Each structure stands twice: as C-alpha cells, then as structure tokens.
Amino acid sequence: MQGLFRNWGGCWWGDATVHRMATGLLAVGVAACGGLRPMGRGPLVPMAVSSQPAQSPAPVATSSARDSMAAAAASAAAAAVSAQTSATAKATDSARRDVSPTEVLAEASKVFGAPLPAPGAYSVANGPSWDIDVRSYETLDRVEFFVRIFSGRAKDDFAASLKRQSRYGSMIRQRLKAGGLPEDMIFLALIESWYNPHAYSSAAAVGMWQFMTRTARGSGMRVDWWIDERRDPVRSTEGAVRYLKGLKDQFGGSLYLAAAAYNGGDGRVSRGLALYADDMKGVEGEDRFFSLSDTKYLRPQTRDYVPKLIAAALIGKEPVRYGMTVDSAPPFAYDSVTVPPLTSMATIATTVGASIADLKDLNPHILRGTTPPGDPFLVRVPVGAGSLAGSLAGLLAGSLAETIAELPAAERTSVKRVASKKGESMASMAKKAGITAKQLAWYNPKVERLKSGNLRAGQGILVPTQGTVLAAFDVPDPSIERFPRRPAPKGKLTKSGKAAGKKSAGGKASGKKPAGSKATVKKSSPKKSAEKKTPAKKSSAKKPAVKKP
Image 1 (cartoon, one colour):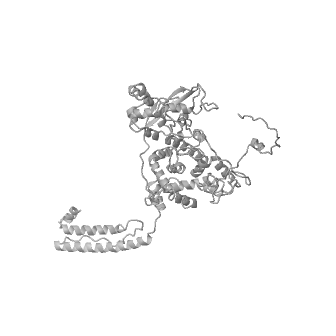
Image 2 (cartoon, rainbow, N blue to C red):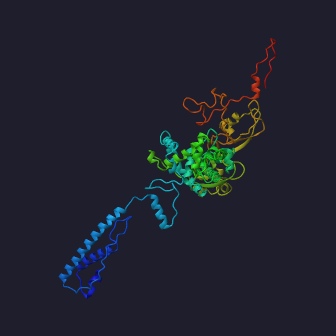
C-alpha cells in the first residue's frame, strides 16, 4: 500500500505521511462499510454518506503542506469513526438479547445443514451427555431417591462398579452400538449386578446381565453343567443386546418399557398397557412407562427399575460431582486359542505362560476347570499369549507336543475315568485323589448311590486332577431356577403366622422378598391333611412294631 501512495500523482510521499493517510482512508472505508461493531448479534447501522459530488483532486502541494493536509484528513476520519462506533454500539446494545442453546443449535443447523440432536442428547457448557432421555426425568422423586442411595450408603459399591465399568465398558458399548441400542444402556448392567460376572440372585439369575436359565438359552447362550455363558461378559452382553432389542421393537421403540419388561417380564408390561389403554391415551414416548408405573400395576421392583437406571446414568457420568473417586482397571482384552475337549485349564496356563488366576478371570464361563467333553473349545488367554502359542490343538499334536509331555501328569490331563468298586463312596474316592467329596461331585452330577450312601459298583466316575480343581468354580447347579410365588389371598396365614398382605413394623414385607412383595401361603398336601384328622381311640393291645423303609 505504501508503494501505491508513494507514486500516486507522480510525486514522492514521505513514510510518515503515507502512514497517516493510509490509516485515515482505512478508517473512512471501515465507517463507509457499516462501522466497527462488536461480535455477536446486532443490526448493521450504515454511515451516512454525503450526496455532494466528489471534488476534483487538488494540485500537488509542498512537503509541509502535504503533511498538514494528511494530518487533518486522519483527524477528521478518526472523529467520524468514533461517532459511528458510538452510534453502532448503542444500536447493538438495544438490540442484544440472551440466546438459548437451542437457538444456537437451530441456527447452526440452518447454516451447516446438520439435523438437530434429539432432546437430552447434547449438553451445555461441557457437561455430561446421554443418548437416553435422562434430563426429562431427573427431578422425579424416585430418581432423586436412588441418586441419594447410590451416592450415600451405596457409594462404595457404586464406585467399585464404575471401576469394573472401566474394564468392560468399551466392549459393552461396542456391542450395544452394533445392536442398534443406545450406549448408555450400559448402566442397566450396573443396576443388575454392579458389572459382576459372578453375581447370583435369590431367584438364581446369574451373571452381569442377570439371566435366568431358560431366558439365556432363548437368547443364544449355552448353559449346562460344564459351561455357563451367563457368566461370560462377552456372550452375556451379546445375549442381552439381542433380548433388549427385541423388547424395544415389541414396545414401539420405548427403551424404558423395554427395560421394565427386562426386569418384570414382557407379558406383565403388555397386559398393563392393554388394561390401562384408555387412561394412557395421548401419552407418548418414554412417558408411557411412567404413566403405567403410576397405575401401580407393575411390581414395586419393576416400578423402581427405570428410576434406578436414570439415577445410575446421572451419577455414572459425573462421579466426582457426587464425591466419588473412581479407580480404573485394565481393559478386558484377550487372545484366543482352540483346545481339544477335556483339556485342563492348568495345562493351557502352563503352555501359554499365564497363571490359572488370569485364565479364570478371562473365562468365568468355564465352570469345571477344564474344557467340556465333546468338541474342541475356544479359550481366552492373555494378550500376546495366543500369538505365541497359536492353536493349542495343533501344539498338542505338533511342535510343542514334547513340552506338554514333560508336564507333570496332574497338570497334563483334566480328568480320568475310574470304575467304582463295591463299598466305595464319593468321600473315599475323593480322598484317594487328594480332593474333597464336594469337588468330586462337580464332575459327577448324576452319580448313582445306594441307600447306604455308597456308590453303585461298576459305574464310571470322573476324577479330576488337583490342577483342574484349582481352576474350577464352586457354583450352584446352572439348571436351577426359582420364580417368585403369587401373593397369598388375604385372610390366610403365612409361614410366619401373620395374615398375608400385612407389613412389618418397618414398613417392608416380612421375609427376604423384595420390598412390596407379599409372603407366601404355607401349603399342606392332601396326605398331610388327612393325617391331621382326629385319630381313632387306641386299643389296649400292644401291636408289633413295623419297620419303616
């Protein structure tokens, strides 16, 4: 710009003169374009432009005159800019107003062509965000109640569960997303089990997602004496995603109705929606769950299920706000090897250079410390061990066959079949193997015993090695299922001798049932009822004693 002014009119202008004139003309140009104004909303107030025709350029003056003229021009331009800026600021202040985050998102959507996010899917001022509707219900009484519980007396358990979430969270979120479910449904596993793969309820629901046996099998999981995939974090999560997706589709896309059905059964939720259809006309979205909950048709545990989920999501995204310090755990990562049937986990651990504890942690679904009989089985090993070991089935027949052959016999094989002899019992056979009778029973669930308690002679008994037993889990029979009994009719007596339906002094139903459930009726069989009738008068003759079988 200086070069332009220096040669303008065929004359040489000094540097100071050029600087002053450039500054003045720049200021005049800014004012002509609307003036300086602060960033943000506010009207453009153009500077008034004179209608007088422009005058012809004046003759070239001397150096001193040129300096005086440039200074005068800069001064006049600065005064004009000052006046214009003041007017613009006043107009801007009068037009300025507060802008909501929603308006900002709407304006951004118009400019950039992006759709607006769903309600509750975004946050303000770098706060937490959820992909389930949390904000609409966070002030409900039951939600606030469980927030106080989780951040109060259950604070330590909640913090421990968030540590487990740091281990399993990435895997769970990936599978939820792949299954078309919101990733924040991860908190459903928190309220079910604290993310504990070995959680076991009074109803015999098992695992991180608390599946009953039949439901788990219906969701594609293997549950038998040897393998219980309800305890497998990966397989149970995949089953839970399939089950929840089906429930979500069944209830018109409502996640909270799906969650209620996950807890209390889809049949009960469906019957409640049909029964109160007239009362719920006009209710849409997730409000449908809360409207159904208000009818008290659902069990108390199910009515509280969704408020627990929302409370867990609130605290889980901001644990520091609720006074929690959460430690992190290593991610759930592993390699896999394929092994032959009935291969001891101790053998696998020795071969791949891992500990038995590591293998138990990665394979909580392998119950008996050995791969099941039948087909080859996939076993998880620590990261790096799989690439080193490859397929253990190949190693047993190939390159590492000699290494495995050198292992102690107690570690090389998982079980051996022994024929029972006359007079032997489970205790005597277990003692010979260096294990307990209970541990021996883990591998022989259908053993036949005589009335004396001894084993029937000649039957095959699987006797595990000590290393196999060390890798096993002491768990109940996976086929067990316990369902809550129906509440007793009013007026009949319960086991405690109180009338059914009455509550204890503490306000909760007596017994170990969940709050709100009623105790069950003590039923007597017809045979016992007959025995309670008044006996006939005894004769004085003494009858011979009869030995009962």
